[in-house]
Length: 460
Image 1: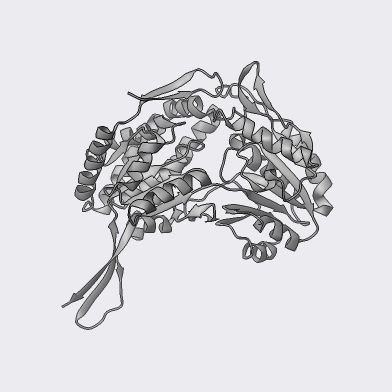
Image 2: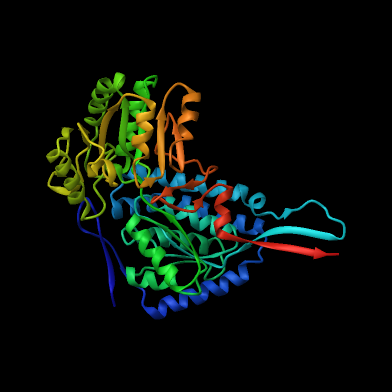
């Protein structure tokens, strides 16, 4: 029997072992999901809401254990992992609060002798593949809305964070979900590809890398016509305009680059700063980034944990080294490191003299690296921000709302922020353009991709 083994990124000891599902187990899971979906589709929305709220309450009761699992599997500081449990509950409760209105029939204007409505029918079985960097948040974006919409869910969490899939399945089971409605599976990439292509799956939702998204999309398209939701990478830009509140911009942009050790699809990965503020901005970022404390993620004082994936420090190092060779200058950090001989860390890194053609300005870093370049105008900042194959978010730092509105219309991204970054409001759709993905999660629009329209045209 094949086994999944996950190491602790700080201790490097084994954190989790799980057997990988074989073909027979996968077949049983899909059959159970199909049966559960058929039975659950007719459940009133208010009953689905009650089920989801009860499940979330159970996860909150287990918050400390769930947070400890997150920290052990991917290295997030325990304080931040506890916060993720709270953020997950907030998103779930919001989606539950809008479910009845969002899933209600659309009744068309009266026409004599006819009744015309558009209903939202459940899809059936949703195959969800969340990511490890925010293992609760990337899962809840799909699991709870899918159940609220009347679907069954087969949850194959990232091999870096398998226990989080189990936590969702256990909570829904304990809350009274029918057998097979939400199941956690552990399987390798080959088996996951087979599930994507399986005709018993009605929708696929993947959160991960652009390369992974291509593989998932290709596996689905090769087999049949099935919709695939993709939440992929980001190379998100921040523009600090000449009239920005400099202190607030520094504080939030540094946090946006370094929170979760930069392992966020919507992290700030490049900053464009009006030349009139550039020197002071760099000075402020340097001072703030020096305050980060790397170390044991279970210790309260640690505010930057290790890098989750074993191969990734070398990738970040390669980006930095190539940038330096091409003329960039490292003001802080720039190296892989350990703390007291333990863990795989990367130093908070501040880069200047960067050029738009460098990898560090074009390819997602997914690490605590902030490259900064000066610009002379709003137009130059927008052009540079849009010069990317990715388009998840961008932030504008200005005191002028009209300026933000004007620039927002020109930015090719799914979300434009004014005076904030690296955040998410569940009332708004989470979506990307270009290679950042397709489809939307959260908000009322998040239910559209988890249901299909059905027209009722009754002649009375």
